[in-house]
Image (cartoon, rainbow, N blue to C red):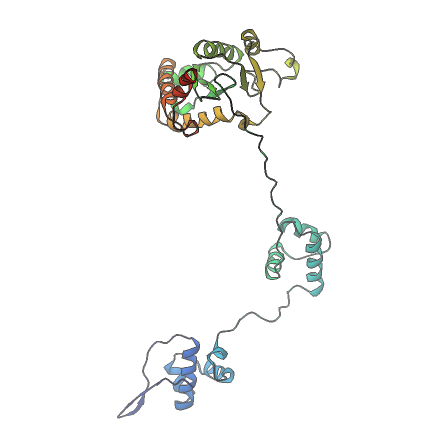
Amino acid sequence: MLRLSCSDKTEGGHSIRHEKYNTGSIVKQAAISCSFKYGVTKAAIRYKTSRQNIYRWRKRYDGTPQSLADRSHRPHSHPNQHTPSELKLIRDMRRRNPNAGLVVFWVKLRQRGYKRSISGLYRVLRRTEQGVIKLPNPKYIARPYEQMQYPGQRVQIDVKYVPAACLVGAAAEDARENGGHYYQYTFIDEYSRFRYLEAFKDNNTYSSATFIRHCVERFPFAIECVQTDNGGEFTNQMKVSKAARPTLFERTLAEFGIRHKRIKVFTPRHNGKVERSHRKDNEYFYASHKFYSFEDFQKQLAVWNRHYNSFPMRPLNWHSPKDVLFSFAKV
């Protein structure tokens, strides 16, 4: 048995030292040893505990520190605890509904006479390890990536609203008179990532037709296919009353012999290259620029377009879109 001294002898007899001890098993052992030698009262004073604790420890002590370890204080029973019939109902329902979440499972139990709260059900499920078994989410299977073989084989066109926070003074007033926005039309070649940007005050099929004419004039290769979303500035397919009537943009494409490909409705990721370039516009251009007039916006947009086409990109093996485009004819 481990014995720790609990007193120092002096001329007046035994004196109890007042030191701080924790309540671990070793200290409990020392308190029991002290109580046998000097009495329960002095041991209780020495170890700063009650006499009842000393008696309880002596009753539990069998010579090993493990017998003095703290035990659970959880009651063995409670008047409001779940009844065996309720526990059986929970087990049976969980077996039949292994994938039901907590709320759905609780509602189904209530439909069968269960009266407990949802928090009480949660504690029972956690204690009995009957949690929900989550099914794996179905994975999106992407279409095979189609790599373009030459410039102009397919291009993407989209429209970006210029953030209102970028318009200052006369530009904000002018935009307010024209519907509240300026618009950035974006043309991007899928092979080279070469872009052509143009500023417009209106977002309609006339602006789209004007933009595609400028793209044909400025892009050094023949354009075979133009891919857009289903916006009203490009097509009437989403308008029931005008679905069979081609827009001015579509008639302009037919005039140049360009095929028009529309992406799936509400699926902007199919126009991913132009959408990704718009995110770069937000991060590196619109986040740090202000426009004081429409002419100022046009000039700054042209400077940004030249910078974008001259900057190396990882998808192009760290070549710039301009280098890839104009080096194609030399291959």
